[in-house]
Amino acid sequence: MELPADLPTGLAEPLEPLVRRVLAGNPSPFTYTGTQTYVVGDGADVAVIDPGPADEDHIAAILATVGEARIAAIMCTHTHRDHSPAAAPLKARTGAPIIGCAPLILADDGPRADEAFDTTYAPDRVLADGERVSGSGWTIEAVATPGHTSNHLCLALVESGGLFTGDHVMGWSTSVISPPDGDMAAYMQSLARLQERSDRIYYPAHGPAVENPAQLVRGMMGHRKQRERQVLRQLEAGPQTIPAMVPAMYKGIDTRLYGAAGRSVLAHLIDLENRGAVARDGELWRLVAGARETANSVS
Image (cartoon, rainbow, N blue to C red):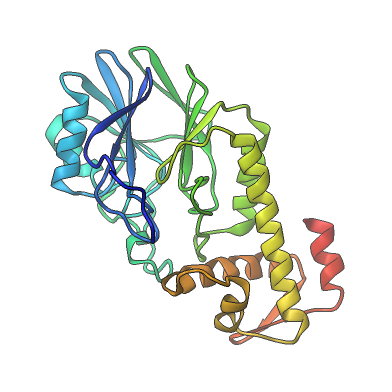
């Protein structure tokens, strides 16, 4: 995996008057350059969004960025282990409340070790869609975006039109949708919801800011529909297993990502199954009569 040079790990990068970014030192094929924690606010109090892994150096960098300000809220978009584990130690050191997504723990959510759910996450307040948290000169509104996980939230900065998108939308890669919790139909509905909004810029948890959000979301929806068509084309040749489909559908990707790609293929297949387009016999998946018409009528 090629990463940009001179990564500012542990440094506060100002992105706009109310937003600073601190990069954690956890790069990987799944996190790109690492988890990006955002500090929102430039006054007496701030919010910390996606505090990241429970890494001492990263926690120290967050506290240095906050400085003398009070942390009014530690906010998490979802509870994968590269996003929320630092919330508990940050709360212990500052007394700040943990506010944001609901807790969610599954025994197995696929092959990604860094994507396991955080068992330490214990929010003081769970935000429902549309609820807000305010501080000195800033307001953050919850936007429910299930799909990548069932508890995923995006967080909108009302004053500037910025949207912290967690793992729901990223400029460098598509989001992994890993059943049983990851849900492709819910993910597509959440993308459609963002398409209806007028956010100025996206700040994802991994990768650069997205300055053309509407265009990116359109492209991502088109990409997912193209993947669905690929699944149907693969099954036109006869029943297949997911491991047999992945290399044909994801040509040229790092083989270390085959497991994650397989989870997204499974998510597409479950969605198509729910729509009556495909059926499964053990590990084999097959088309059913009228599959193309059924899929196209719902897409």
